[in-house]
Image 1 (cartoon, rainbow, N blue to C red):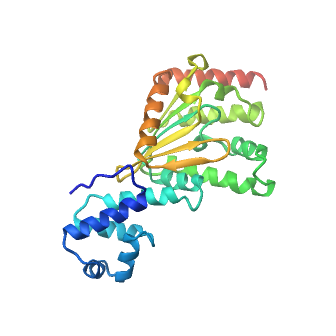
Image 2: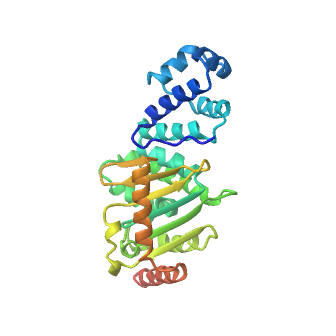
Image 3: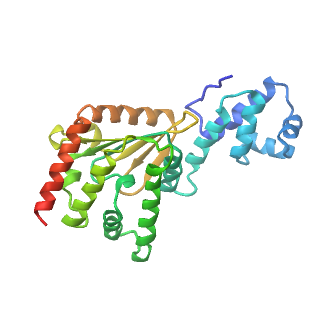
Length: 275
């Protein structure tokens, strides 16, 4: 059985409305449903009235009771992302760690997943909002993210980079040279595709910001969009579709994989000769 999402509703509204409707259609009172879920009846009432949030466990058990294919589980994912209690970057790390496919666009920097410790450290030390005593912790957290590249079933990654990224000396020439050498190595992983977008392409669709898309095991698509002040992670259909279209438009101007590797190698040679 499949239940369609209503993009006009928030995740909390969707969860509550679907629970009320499906419970009614299946002639289940709140007491009977609570008994099957092994929870107090008041919890069902509170969820339906938006007074309390469900858990993933309850969402999955509701899917089982109503014979749904991860519907409530998917809405719960949206709910968790929309509330963003732990901050958008923490949310994205959680998404990233479970993703089957990741597609990203970076007009300014090497993607976080591909950064070396020295490159990341230079970025964090240059940030006016990160205290010096927290830099090492931030670098460690970023290096831990890269662990998904080495897991038994790594995600398929397609990363688009603006050509200028290869010539922006973050941390100095030596740091950038080491970073590009690492990027070249990662770009040859069987599950990774790195494509360079020439600066001369202008790339209008990518001038707004960096972004990334992820496909989760439950089939849901998630996007994160960066900015100078904050970011946003969402499963809402409209922004997801907009980012997909932007990614496709940017990729249309990107160099093929092999040619992109050649451009990276040429940048490494350029920075090596300056050392």
